[in-house]
Amino acid sequence: MRTEIIWKFLVASVILLFGVIIIVSTMLTYPLNLNSVITEYYLESLHLTGSINVVTAILLDFRIYDTLGEILVIFVTISGIMMLIWRKNDLKNC
Amino acid sequence: MTSRIVKIVSRELTPFIFLFGVYIIIYGHLSPGGGFQGGVILAMGAILVMVIYGGEKMQKYVPHLAFIEILGVFLFLLFGLLSISYGKQFYSNLGTIWILNIIIGLKVFVGLVILYLLFIRWELSK
Image (cartoon, rainbow over all chains, first blue to last red; front, side, top):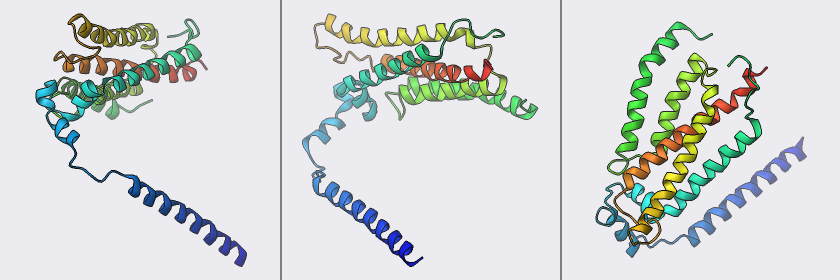
C-alpha cells in the first residue's frame, strides 16, 4: 500500500517536471518581440488584398498555398474513403 | 423513430441554419468567418435534416456530390492559373477573395455531406 502511494507520487512528479520543462523551453524560445514589422504589414490587409478581415486575407492571399494544401487534403481524404466503402449497387432499397 | 416535436423543430430551424451559413460564406472577407466555417455550418444543417428524416434517399446522389467536390478543386486551381493569364504570379490577388470563399464553402459543405452519407452506409446495408 505504501509503495503504491510512493510510486504514484513519483509518476506524478515526473509528469509535472516534464510539463514544467515544456513550458519553460517554450517560453524561452518564443519570440517575445510583438512590435515587429510584419504586424503592421498584416494590418494593411485592406489596401493589399481588398479584404477587411485579416484572417481571410492571410488564408486566401498571403498563405494561399496553405489553403490549397488543405483543400487537396480534404479531396484526397474523401477520395480514399469513397474508394474504400462506396460501391455502386450494394444497397437494394435506396 | 424520431418524435414529432423533433421533426417540426428541425424543419422550422433548417432554413435559418442555411441562411446563416450562406451569410458567413459571402461576408467572409468583411466580417469574421469564411469558407470553411460557413461550409461546416451548411453541412450541419444538411446533416440535421438527414439525421431526423433519414439519409437513405440521398444515397443515390453521392456521385453527383463527388462531382461538385472535384469541380471545386478544379475551380480553385483555375483561379491560380487565371492570375498567370493576367501576367502576374501564380495565385496573386485579383480581388477574387470572395469567389474563393464561395468555392471553399461549397467544397467543404459537399465534402462533409459525402462523409456523413458514406459513414451511414454500413448501417443501411445490414
